[in-house]
Image (cartoon, rainbow, N blue to C red; front, side, top):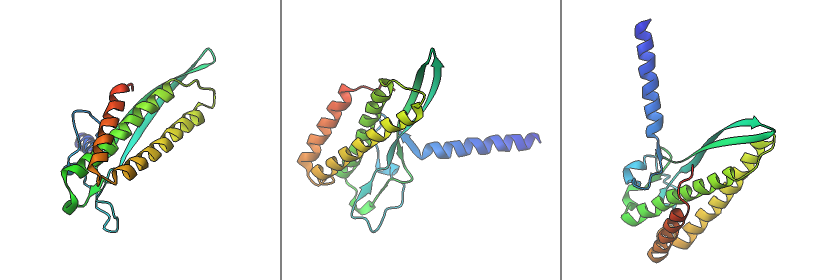
Length: 178
């Protein structure tokens, strides 16, 4: 029985490590590398690489004096198993382009945090939170599309530099607040 408990704990720790290894949290001092793109490339895709990142969030709430106090926890993560690149098309410019997709997701993580934390909630807070989240995700999708179109998926180096400067300026203006 004791051996079973030890094996169960080891298995749980190993599974937790495997899940965590598949997610990379955004950090200013830790840019992506090509090793992070572990997914299988889509041979039919015209893209040279795909970055899959998401904003994870959860919250706690308490009702006090008929007011909902909600505490949020947000995290911008990069998914290694579903992000991919075609090895024969890898280069420094493309990696910078993909990093900026992750940086844009960080910008919207911060914007989401501001929106969530500055809202007042009713007893429909779950729907209200979902509405705010969905609105910001729609804005981010449009923003990411605009970035890809204007930079021609890293093909226009001049536009790429302008976007990098713009996003880094926005990130500096809106420090992490989650």
